[in-house]
Amino acid sequence: LTLILLLFFTIHFSPNVPSRCLLLELLDVSASELLLYSSHQGCSMWMIQHCARDVLEALAFLHHEGYVHADLKPRNILWSAENECFKLIDFGLSFKEGNQDEKYIQTDRYRAPEAELQNCLAQAGLQSDTECTSAVDLWSLGIILLEMFSGMKLKHTVRSQEWKANSSAIIDHIFASKAVVNAAIPAYHLRDLMKSMLHDDPSRRIPAEMALCSAFFSIPFAPHIEDLVMLPTPVLRLLNVLDDDYLENEEEYEDVVQGVKEECQKYGPVVSLLVPKENPGRGQVFVEYANAGDSKAAQKLLTGRMFDGKFVVATFYPLSAYKRGYLYQTLL
Image (tube, rainbow, N blue to C red; front, side, top):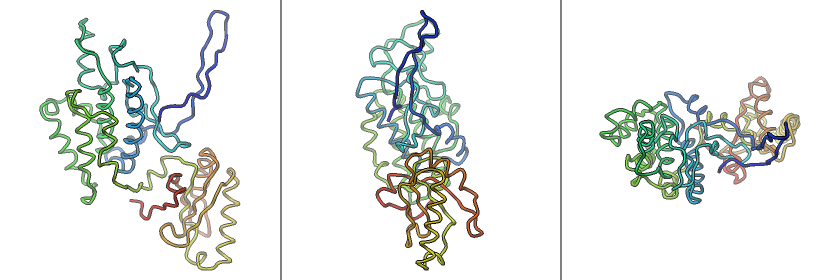
């Protein structure tokens, strides 16, 4: 779940100064934008779980190969519409564990305590006894997830004496004060996962591979409608198109479905189209495009269009769920 290098080439603008170019895949919205959008209310549990799992899988692979990302932050986590997952970018500060050349690693606000100490020593011209390890990435991810859950920036909180004295109690307080969390949702699994990432002692921090075994990832969450607007996929879901009259009249139903398909094909080839007659998904229109670029163009132009006197609402829909025939019954 890391950025894909599509092509590498060299341009010779002058004989002695070749320019090396990398062609990388185009990604979409960043976790930083998601945090901005959900400011003060926090992201949905589905969004947090999706982001946490994808980033942990990327870190598990990276750490298994012996590398540390060393600059994990929301701007370096981007959504891939084609692969329907979050990916890591910007390996400018990365290093092979045990061979750390750069002493100033990680971005302020997501910097692990041992990296902060190392930076302070380097500024004073002193050498640190130990080098940072892959545990710094888990610290950064823990802060990111806590910000996604709380909807708050935590820079000053993490630097406070209260955090240094008892970070676990502060995390408990954040979860206890999050009024929007339904009591039926076992949010304590996420709380415990964050605590395991945010130990001051890096040797006690949970490794990425072990974190993926957390009970938090066994809970099936449904996305909010805002999630489906923010995260592009090759599948569109159209709401407010068909009412019961169309669904119960076979001839009208076929005519409307054909009309919707012809309209959707204006924006790109339609791979498949589904209009369930029963719940879940009754009356909704699911349109699978060949690629996310076409679905994004369609979503932009179809949203707000009038159909039979009603405004159409167009969101994206998880391709993996659509392929399995899984239609979310409720969108919180």
